[in-house]
Image 1 (tube, one colour):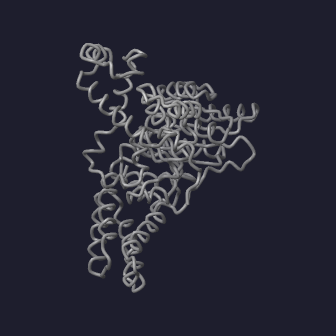
Image 2: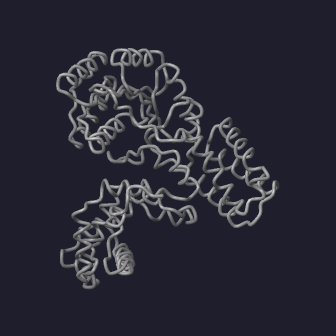
Image 3: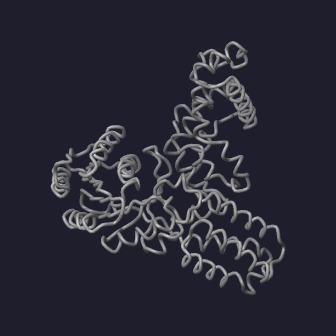
Length: 449
Protein backbone atom coordinates (compact mmCIF):
# COMPACT_ATOMS: atom_id res chain seq x y z
CA UNK A 1 0.00 0.00 0.00
CA UNK A 2 1.10 3.58 -0.72
CA UNK A 3 4.02 2.31 -2.84
CA UNK A 4 3.90 5.07 -5.47
CA UNK A 5 2.99 7.80 -2.96
CA UNK A 6 5.67 6.65 -0.54
CA UNK A 7 8.28 6.60 -3.32
CA UNK A 8 7.48 10.20 -4.29
CA UNK A 9 7.20 11.59 -0.77
CA UNK A 10 10.24 9.80 0.65
CA UNK A 11 12.30 11.15 -2.26
CA UNK A 12 11.09 14.68 -1.47
CA UNK A 13 11.90 14.12 2.21
CA UNK A 14 15.43 12.97 1.39
CA UNK A 15 15.93 16.10 -0.72
CA UNK A 16 14.86 18.27 2.21
CA UNK A 17 17.15 16.53 4.66
CA UNK A 18 20.07 17.08 2.33
CA UNK A 19 19.70 20.87 2.34
CA UNK A 20 21.22 23.08 4.97
CA UNK A 21 18.84 25.97 4.34
CA UNK A 22 15.41 26.20 2.77
CA UNK A 23 13.73 29.22 1.17
CA UNK A 24 10.11 29.97 0.40
CA UNK A 25 10.81 29.15 -3.25
CA UNK A 26 12.06 25.62 -2.72
CA UNK A 27 9.36 25.00 -0.09
CA UNK A 28 6.81 25.93 -2.78
CA UNK A 29 8.51 23.53 -5.22
CA UNK A 30 8.32 20.75 -2.65
CA UNK A 31 4.66 21.44 -1.92
CA UNK A 32 3.96 21.23 -5.66
CA UNK A 33 5.61 17.79 -5.72
CA UNK A 34 3.54 16.65 -2.74
CA UNK A 35 0.33 17.94 -4.33
CA UNK A 36 1.01 16.01 -7.56
CA UNK A 37 1.92 12.89 -5.57
CA UNK A 38 -1.35 13.02 -3.62
CA UNK A 39 -3.45 13.59 -6.74
CA UNK A 40 -1.74 10.68 -8.52
CA UNK A 41 -2.50 8.54 -5.46
CA UNK A 42 -6.21 9.26 -6.10
CA UNK A 43 -6.66 11.36 -2.98
CA UNK A 44 -9.83 13.46 -3.19
CA UNK A 45 -9.16 17.03 -4.37
CA UNK A 46 -10.68 18.77 -1.28
CA UNK A 47 -8.46 16.62 0.92
CA UNK A 48 -5.35 17.49 -1.10
CA UNK A 49 -6.18 21.18 -0.87
CA UNK A 50 -6.65 21.28 2.89
CA UNK A 51 -3.52 19.19 3.44
CA UNK A 52 -1.31 21.43 1.29
CA UNK A 53 -2.79 24.58 2.84
CA UNK A 54 -2.08 23.30 6.36
CA UNK A 55 1.51 22.29 5.55
CA UNK A 56 2.15 25.58 3.76
CA UNK A 57 0.80 27.65 6.66
CA UNK A 58 3.15 25.93 9.10
CA UNK A 59 6.15 25.61 6.78
CA UNK A 60 6.41 29.13 5.37
CA UNK A 61 7.31 30.99 8.55
CA UNK A 62 10.45 32.53 9.91
CA UNK A 63 10.74 29.86 12.62
CA UNK A 64 11.05 27.13 10.01
CA UNK A 65 13.25 28.95 7.51
CA UNK A 66 15.73 30.17 10.17
CA UNK A 67 15.94 26.90 12.06
CA UNK A 68 19.25 25.02 12.10
CA UNK A 69 17.55 21.91 10.67
CA UNK A 70 14.83 23.20 8.34
CA UNK A 71 14.65 19.92 6.42
CA UNK A 72 13.91 17.97 9.59
CA UNK A 73 11.31 20.53 10.60
CA UNK A 74 9.52 20.22 7.25
CA UNK A 75 9.52 16.43 7.50
CA UNK A 76 7.95 16.71 10.95
CA UNK A 77 5.29 19.12 9.68
CA UNK A 78 4.34 16.79 6.80
CA UNK A 79 4.32 13.76 9.10
CA UNK A 80 2.16 15.57 11.67
CA UNK A 81 -0.33 16.73 9.03
CA UNK A 82 -0.54 13.24 7.51
CA UNK A 83 -1.27 11.90 10.99
CA UNK A 84 -4.04 14.47 11.49
CA UNK A 85 -5.51 13.66 8.07
CA UNK A 86 -5.55 9.93 8.89
CA UNK A 87 -7.22 10.45 12.26
CA UNK A 88 -4.49 11.38 14.78
CA UNK A 89 -4.80 8.33 17.05
CA UNK A 90 -5.82 4.69 17.06
CA UNK A 91 -9.56 4.39 17.60
CA UNK A 92 -10.02 0.99 19.25
CA UNK A 93 -13.18 -1.10 19.28
CA UNK A 94 -15.60 -0.28 22.07
CA UNK A 95 -15.77 -3.39 24.24
CA UNK A 96 -16.82 -1.58 27.42
CA UNK A 97 -20.37 -2.88 27.43
CA UNK A 98 -22.36 -5.65 29.07
CA UNK A 99 -21.86 -8.74 26.87
CA UNK A 100 -22.58 -9.54 24.19
CA UNK A 101 -21.04 -6.60 22.32
CA UNK A 102 -22.76 -6.67 18.92
CA UNK A 103 -20.69 -5.70 15.87
CA UNK A 104 -22.54 -5.18 12.59
CA UNK A 105 -20.57 -5.23 9.31
CA UNK A 106 -21.97 -3.35 6.30
CA UNK A 107 -20.71 -2.69 2.79
CA UNK A 108 -21.07 -3.41 -0.91
CA UNK A 109 -20.75 -6.88 -2.41
CA UNK A 110 -17.14 -7.82 -3.02
CA UNK A 111 -15.75 -5.42 -0.44
CA UNK A 112 -14.51 -8.25 1.78
CA UNK A 113 -17.18 -8.23 4.53
CA UNK A 114 -17.31 -11.98 5.07
CA UNK A 115 -13.53 -12.37 5.25
CA UNK A 116 -13.32 -9.31 7.49
CA UNK A 117 -15.91 -10.82 9.87
CA UNK A 118 -13.70 -13.89 10.31
CA UNK A 119 -10.54 -11.77 10.61
CA UNK A 120 -12.20 -9.64 13.28
CA UNK A 121 -13.29 -12.77 15.17
CA UNK A 122 -9.74 -14.11 15.12
CA UNK A 123 -8.37 -10.75 16.24
CA UNK A 124 -10.77 -10.59 19.20
CA UNK A 125 -10.13 -14.17 20.31
CA UNK A 126 -6.34 -13.91 20.00
CA UNK A 127 -5.61 -10.41 21.21
CA UNK A 128 -8.51 -9.77 23.58
CA UNK A 129 -9.33 -13.36 24.62
CA UNK A 130 -13.01 -12.88 23.81
CA UNK A 131 -15.59 -15.61 23.25
CA UNK A 132 -16.98 -14.76 19.81
CA UNK A 133 -20.07 -15.89 17.90
CA UNK A 134 -20.32 -15.31 14.14
CA UNK A 135 -23.49 -15.19 12.04
CA UNK A 136 -24.19 -14.55 8.35
CA UNK A 137 -27.36 -12.69 7.35
CA UNK A 138 -26.50 -12.69 3.64
CA UNK A 139 -29.44 -14.78 2.42
CA UNK A 140 -29.02 -13.53 -1.16
CA UNK A 141 -25.64 -15.18 -1.63
CA UNK A 142 -25.62 -18.73 -0.17
CA UNK A 143 -21.89 -18.93 -0.92
CA UNK A 144 -21.35 -16.19 1.67
CA UNK A 145 -23.05 -18.30 4.37
CA UNK A 146 -20.89 -21.29 3.42
CA UNK A 147 -17.74 -19.15 3.24
CA UNK A 148 -18.24 -17.79 6.76
CA UNK A 149 -18.91 -21.30 8.10
CA UNK A 150 -15.65 -22.52 6.53
CA UNK A 151 -13.66 -19.61 7.93
CA UNK A 152 -15.24 -20.06 11.38
CA UNK A 153 -14.10 -23.68 11.43
CA UNK A 154 -10.60 -22.64 10.33
CA UNK A 155 -10.20 -20.16 13.21
CA UNK A 156 -12.10 -22.36 15.70
CA UNK A 157 -14.86 -19.81 16.38
CA UNK A 158 -18.55 -20.68 16.86
CA UNK A 159 -21.12 -19.74 14.23
CA UNK A 160 -24.90 -19.52 14.31
CA UNK A 161 -26.42 -21.60 11.50
CA UNK A 162 -28.38 -19.66 8.89
CA UNK A 163 -30.18 -20.57 5.66
CA UNK A 164 -30.95 -18.70 2.45
CA UNK A 165 -34.69 -19.36 2.99
CA UNK A 166 -34.78 -17.31 6.22
CA UNK A 167 -35.28 -13.60 6.76
CA UNK A 168 -32.12 -11.69 7.83
CA UNK A 169 -33.91 -10.18 10.83
CA UNK A 170 -34.99 -13.64 12.05
CA UNK A 171 -31.43 -14.95 11.77
CA UNK A 172 -29.92 -11.96 13.55
CA UNK A 173 -32.46 -12.07 16.40
CA UNK A 174 -31.85 -15.79 16.94
CA UNK A 175 -28.08 -15.25 16.99
CA UNK A 176 -28.44 -12.45 19.53
CA UNK A 177 -30.58 -14.63 21.84
CA UNK A 178 -27.99 -17.41 21.63
CA UNK A 179 -25.15 -14.99 22.33
CA UNK A 180 -27.00 -13.76 25.43
CA UNK A 181 -27.97 -17.23 26.65
CA UNK A 182 -24.54 -18.83 26.13
CA UNK A 183 -22.52 -15.91 27.51
CA UNK A 184 -20.64 -14.85 24.39
CA UNK A 185 -18.55 -11.70 24.73
CA UNK A 186 -19.01 -10.59 21.12
CA UNK A 187 -21.52 -11.25 18.34
CA UNK A 188 -20.27 -10.39 14.83
CA UNK A 189 -23.02 -10.02 12.20
CA UNK A 190 -22.12 -10.27 8.49
CA UNK A 191 -24.78 -8.59 6.34
CA UNK A 192 -25.69 -8.76 2.66
CA UNK A 193 -24.01 -6.55 0.12
CA UNK A 194 -25.16 -5.30 -3.28
CA UNK A 195 -23.29 -4.31 -6.40
CA UNK A 196 -24.47 -0.76 -5.74
CA UNK A 197 -26.34 1.20 -3.08
CA UNK A 198 -30.10 0.65 -3.36
CA UNK A 199 -33.19 1.42 -1.28
CA UNK A 200 -33.94 -2.22 -0.39
CA UNK A 201 -30.41 -2.78 0.87
CA UNK A 202 -30.46 0.31 3.06
CA UNK A 203 -33.92 -0.50 4.45
CA UNK A 204 -32.83 -4.02 5.40
CA UNK A 205 -29.65 -2.98 7.17
CA UNK A 206 -31.45 -0.16 8.98
CA UNK A 207 -33.89 -2.75 10.38
CA UNK A 208 -30.99 -4.97 11.48
CA UNK A 209 -29.26 -2.03 13.12
CA UNK A 210 -32.43 -1.03 14.98
CA UNK A 211 -33.10 -4.59 16.20
CA UNK A 212 -29.55 -5.39 17.30
CA UNK A 213 -28.51 -1.97 18.63
CA UNK A 214 -24.82 -2.74 17.86
CA UNK A 215 -22.04 -1.11 19.85
CA UNK A 216 -19.99 -1.06 16.62
CA UNK A 217 -21.40 -0.57 13.12
CA UNK A 218 -18.39 -1.01 10.84
CA UNK A 219 -18.35 -0.12 7.16
CA UNK A 220 -16.17 -2.50 5.14
CA UNK A 221 -14.77 -0.95 1.96
CA UNK A 222 -12.31 -1.99 -0.75
CA UNK A 223 -9.36 0.43 -0.71
CA UNK A 224 -8.69 -0.24 -4.40
CA UNK A 225 -11.85 1.66 -5.37
CA UNK A 226 -9.98 4.88 -4.51
CA UNK A 227 -12.10 8.02 -4.16
CA UNK A 228 -15.27 5.95 -4.69
CA UNK A 229 -14.55 4.27 -1.35
CA UNK A 230 -14.96 7.57 0.46
CA UNK A 231 -18.12 8.44 -1.51
CA UNK A 232 -19.73 5.06 -0.74
CA UNK A 233 -18.77 5.32 2.92
CA UNK A 234 -20.44 8.73 3.09
CA UNK A 235 -23.68 7.28 1.64
CA UNK A 236 -23.72 4.50 4.25
CA UNK A 237 -22.92 6.97 7.02
CA UNK A 238 -25.92 9.06 6.01
CA UNK A 239 -28.14 5.97 6.48
CA UNK A 240 -26.47 4.28 9.46
CA UNK A 241 -24.77 5.39 12.67
CA UNK A 242 -21.35 4.14 11.55
CA UNK A 243 -18.73 3.90 14.27
CA UNK A 244 -15.77 3.07 12.08
CA UNK A 245 -14.31 1.70 8.86
CA UNK A 246 -12.43 -1.46 7.88
CA UNK A 247 -10.33 -0.75 4.81
CA UNK A 248 -9.69 -4.00 2.92
CA UNK A 249 -7.28 -5.18 0.21
CA UNK A 250 -4.71 -2.57 1.18
CA UNK A 251 -1.92 -5.01 0.22
CA UNK A 252 -3.02 -4.64 -3.42
CA UNK A 253 -3.55 -0.87 -3.30
CA UNK A 254 -0.40 0.87 -4.49
CA UNK A 255 -1.97 4.34 -4.38
CA UNK A 256 -3.63 4.73 -0.98
CA UNK A 257 -6.07 7.48 -1.91
CA UNK A 258 -8.94 5.84 0.00
CA UNK A 259 -7.10 5.81 3.32
CA UNK A 260 -6.13 9.46 2.98
CA UNK A 261 -9.59 10.62 1.87
CA UNK A 262 -12.08 8.54 3.81
CA UNK A 263 -11.53 9.94 7.30
CA UNK A 264 -11.84 13.57 6.15
CA UNK A 265 -14.90 12.96 3.97
CA UNK A 266 -16.88 10.78 6.42
CA UNK A 267 -15.51 11.98 9.75
CA UNK A 268 -15.40 8.31 10.81
CA UNK A 269 -12.22 6.60 12.01
CA UNK A 270 -10.49 3.81 10.14
CA UNK A 271 -10.29 1.06 12.75
CA UNK A 272 -8.61 -1.75 10.80
CA UNK A 273 -6.63 -2.43 7.63
CA UNK A 274 -7.04 -5.71 5.75
CA UNK A 275 -3.52 -6.51 4.56
CA UNK A 276 -3.92 -9.85 2.81
CA UNK A 277 -6.15 -12.87 2.26
CA UNK A 278 -5.05 -14.81 5.37
CA UNK A 279 -7.43 -14.68 8.34
CA UNK A 280 -4.59 -13.25 10.43
CA UNK A 281 -4.07 -10.38 7.97
CA UNK A 282 -5.92 -7.67 9.89
CA UNK A 283 -4.07 -4.76 11.50
CA UNK A 284 -5.37 -2.14 13.95
CA UNK A 285 -5.10 1.25 12.30
CA UNK A 286 -2.56 3.64 13.82
CA UNK A 287 -2.48 7.00 11.95
CA UNK A 288 0.92 8.05 13.31
CA UNK A 289 2.53 4.74 12.35
CA UNK A 290 1.03 4.78 8.85
CA UNK A 291 2.21 8.37 8.32
CA UNK A 292 5.71 7.20 9.21
CA UNK A 293 5.45 4.33 6.70
CA UNK A 294 4.22 6.66 3.94
CA UNK A 295 7.34 8.81 4.42
CA UNK A 296 9.59 5.75 4.20
CA UNK A 297 10.45 5.75 7.91
CA UNK A 298 8.99 2.36 8.67
CA UNK A 299 6.88 1.17 11.59
CA UNK A 300 9.07 -0.69 14.04
CA UNK A 301 6.51 -0.60 16.87
CA UNK A 302 3.92 -2.56 14.84
CA UNK A 303 6.64 -4.90 13.64
CA UNK A 304 7.65 -5.73 17.21
CA UNK A 305 4.03 -6.16 18.30
CA UNK A 306 3.41 -8.62 15.46
CA UNK A 307 6.59 -10.53 16.35
CA UNK A 308 5.65 -10.79 20.01
CA UNK A 309 2.23 -12.15 19.04
CA UNK A 310 3.20 -14.59 16.31
CA UNK A 311 6.82 -15.66 16.82
CA UNK A 312 7.12 -19.25 18.01
CA UNK A 313 9.20 -18.70 21.14
CA UNK A 314 10.10 -22.38 21.45
CA UNK A 315 11.52 -22.55 17.93
CA UNK A 316 13.26 -19.19 18.35
CA UNK A 317 14.94 -20.32 21.58
CA UNK A 318 15.87 -23.64 19.98
CA UNK A 319 17.57 -21.84 17.08
CA UNK A 320 19.41 -19.51 19.47
CA UNK A 321 20.75 -22.40 21.57
CA UNK A 322 21.71 -24.32 18.43
CA UNK A 323 23.79 -21.45 17.10
CA UNK A 324 25.33 -20.74 20.49
CA UNK A 325 26.66 -24.30 20.42
CA UNK A 326 28.36 -23.55 17.12
CA UNK A 327 25.93 -25.51 14.97
CA UNK A 328 25.17 -23.87 11.65
CA UNK A 329 21.99 -22.27 10.34
CA UNK A 330 20.50 -24.88 7.98
CA UNK A 331 17.67 -25.02 5.45
CA UNK A 332 15.13 -26.24 8.01
CA UNK A 333 15.92 -23.12 10.07
CA UNK A 334 15.56 -21.02 6.90
CA UNK A 335 12.12 -22.56 6.28
CA UNK A 336 11.09 -21.85 9.89
CA UNK A 337 12.08 -18.19 9.51
CA UNK A 338 9.88 -17.92 6.39
CA UNK A 339 6.97 -19.54 8.27
CA UNK A 340 7.39 -16.97 11.05
CA UNK A 341 7.29 -14.14 8.49
CA UNK A 342 4.09 -15.55 6.98
CA UNK A 343 2.45 -15.57 10.41
CA UNK A 344 3.30 -11.88 10.70
CA UNK A 345 1.47 -11.03 7.48
CA UNK A 346 4.02 -12.03 4.85
CA UNK A 347 7.21 -10.52 3.53
CA UNK A 348 5.48 -7.58 1.80
CA UNK A 349 3.82 -6.54 5.05
CA UNK A 350 7.14 -6.79 6.90
CA UNK A 351 8.99 -4.81 4.26
CA UNK A 352 6.42 -2.02 4.51
CA UNK A 353 7.24 -1.65 8.20
CA UNK A 354 11.02 -1.57 7.83
CA UNK A 355 12.66 1.88 7.77
CA UNK A 356 14.39 2.92 4.54
CA UNK A 357 12.33 0.74 2.21
CA UNK A 358 11.32 3.84 0.24
CA UNK A 359 14.90 4.17 -0.97
CA UNK A 360 14.84 0.70 -2.55
CA UNK A 361 13.74 0.72 -6.23
CA UNK A 362 10.28 -0.72 -6.88
CA UNK A 363 11.61 -3.29 -9.36
CA UNK A 364 13.87 -4.69 -6.62
CA UNK A 365 11.06 -4.80 -4.00
CA UNK A 366 8.72 -6.51 -6.47
CA UNK A 367 11.11 -9.46 -6.76
CA UNK A 368 10.75 -10.16 -3.04
CA UNK A 369 7.19 -11.35 -2.58
CA UNK A 370 5.14 -14.00 -0.81
CA UNK A 371 4.80 -16.07 -4.00
CA UNK A 372 8.58 -16.42 -4.30
CA UNK A 373 8.76 -17.39 -0.62
CA UNK A 374 6.11 -20.06 -1.22
CA UNK A 375 8.32 -21.47 -3.95
CA UNK A 376 11.28 -21.54 -1.55
CA UNK A 377 9.25 -23.56 0.98
CA UNK A 378 8.17 -26.01 -1.75
CA UNK A 379 11.80 -26.55 -2.79
CA UNK A 380 12.99 -27.11 0.79
CA UNK A 381 10.10 -29.52 1.44
CA UNK A 382 11.22 -31.57 -1.57
CA UNK A 383 14.62 -32.20 0.04
CA UNK A 384 15.49 -35.05 2.37
CA UNK A 385 16.20 -34.21 6.04
CA UNK A 386 19.90 -34.87 5.37
CA UNK A 387 19.93 -32.42 2.43
CA UNK A 388 18.27 -29.73 4.54
CA UNK A 389 20.89 -30.13 7.26
CA UNK A 390 23.81 -30.27 4.83
CA UNK A 391 23.01 -28.44 1.55
CA UNK A 392 26.65 -28.75 0.43
CA UNK A 393 25.82 -32.29 -0.77
CA UNK A 394 23.33 -30.92 -3.31
CA UNK A 395 24.83 -31.67 -6.71
CA UNK A 396 23.38 -32.09 -10.19
CA UNK A 397 21.21 -35.22 -9.82
CA UNK A 398 19.87 -34.20 -6.41
CA UNK A 399 18.99 -30.74 -7.70
CA UNK A 400 17.09 -32.22 -10.66
CA UNK A 401 15.09 -34.48 -8.32
CA UNK A 402 14.27 -31.56 -5.99
CA UNK A 403 13.22 -29.32 -8.91
CA UNK A 404 10.94 -32.05 -10.26
CA UNK A 405 9.42 -32.68 -6.82
CA UNK A 406 8.70 -29.00 -6.21
CA UNK A 407 7.47 -28.13 -9.70
CA UNK A 408 10.37 -25.74 -10.29
CA UNK A 409 13.54 -25.52 -12.41
CA UNK A 410 17.12 -26.35 -11.42
CA UNK A 411 17.98 -22.64 -11.68
CA UNK A 412 15.29 -21.98 -9.04
CA UNK A 413 17.02 -24.45 -6.72
CA UNK A 414 20.37 -22.76 -7.39
CA UNK A 415 18.84 -19.35 -6.68
CA UNK A 416 17.46 -20.63 -3.38
CA UNK A 417 20.84 -22.02 -2.35
CA UNK A 418 22.50 -18.66 -3.07
CA UNK A 419 19.86 -16.86 -0.97
CA UNK A 420 20.34 -19.41 1.79
CA UNK A 421 24.13 -19.03 1.86
CA UNK A 422 23.73 -15.23 1.95
CA UNK A 423 21.37 -15.54 4.91
CA UNK A 424 23.69 -18.04 6.60
CA UNK A 425 26.52 -15.50 6.34
CA UNK A 426 24.28 -12.78 7.78
CA UNK A 427 23.30 -15.00 10.71
CA UNK A 428 26.97 -15.60 11.53
CA UNK A 429 27.58 -11.84 11.57
CA UNK A 430 24.86 -11.34 14.15
CA UNK A 431 27.28 -12.38 16.84
CA UNK A 432 28.00 -15.42 18.91
CA UNK A 433 24.38 -15.58 20.11
CA UNK A 434 23.21 -15.58 16.51
CA UNK A 435 19.47 -15.16 17.01
CA UNK A 436 17.21 -15.39 13.99
CA UNK A 437 15.45 -12.30 12.68
CA UNK A 438 12.09 -13.31 14.17
CA UNK A 439 13.72 -14.25 17.47
CA UNK A 440 15.37 -10.84 17.78
CA UNK A 441 12.13 -9.01 17.00
CA UNK A 442 10.20 -11.15 19.47
CA UNK A 443 12.68 -10.31 22.19
CA UNK A 444 12.49 -6.55 21.67
CA UNK A 445 10.46 -4.36 24.03
CA UNK A 446 6.85 -3.72 23.09
CA UNK A 447 7.28 0.03 22.94
CA UNK A 448 10.05 2.07 21.42
CA UNK A 449 11.01 5.65 22.17
